[in-house]
Length: 379
Image (tube, rainbow, N blue to C red):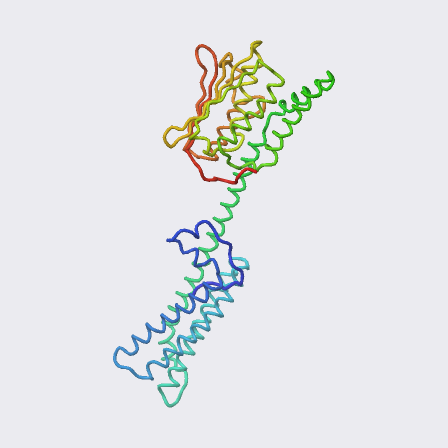
């Protein structure tokens, strides 16, 4: 019985699914107001009636209580309208008007109660000082309690609304960051691929140019058309890597030697889309490009208990100062992957990189084995 009754219905929130939460009750604020108002004053009527007839039932005791409850119900409806207006004006003025309105409502309620009581119990109805003073205390307690409950519930609703807005903003920021990280593909990869296609055209090797252009188109269609925050299966991620490597293999030919070992049990596991592409790109830049004989790039995915373990390794020269930097040719690299893993799994993941003493570099990722679509399915 203690809140303003707007006609709008608030949007559902995640907390509404909590069985211990009171928020579902307040999803429809108008319905919640009328429910509380009716339940509160009905309870007040029952309580006052029980007290009134504790020494014996009589109409003289019941009728004034019924009138008192009806008057309180009507006065608090007026208070809810005025309080709703006061909440929209400057705070100091609103507090002053609230207190003045509460005092006036208390006096009016006490006067009406005194009059109704005298009308029923005496032959000469009227408001006496004794009756008025006797009613002031109880009416003040009732209306002050109602007012306190009104402002407490509305404050609760305001706080919950602000929490929802903060959660929505955090979700938008998280989605924007994931999209930014996903779209940070290597501009040099695109430049080199287009340059290679141009060279093949100049050399009149149209079949190879068409094949390379077709693969580039398919890769870009996947990276640009799909939801950037989507999770895909390991099988989908591996197919995308193979498409990417086919494009690069047309540039490096036998110098680039990719191999895949995928545990069939892990193929349905989900992970952020294009999570492994920067690792393969990193290996091409630092293992294949600087060596005349090129290098082998190995992608290994295994299911270990309820964890998916992914390793990307190469047979390049291993760790050196340039490669140890947190950025690679895209300007993102390993730090990009760390951030995406943190966004997707929080602390429930592992990311390690190491250089073998005999040469070669490897990155190992361990994530939870998840089959459900965490975000949105990739197209």
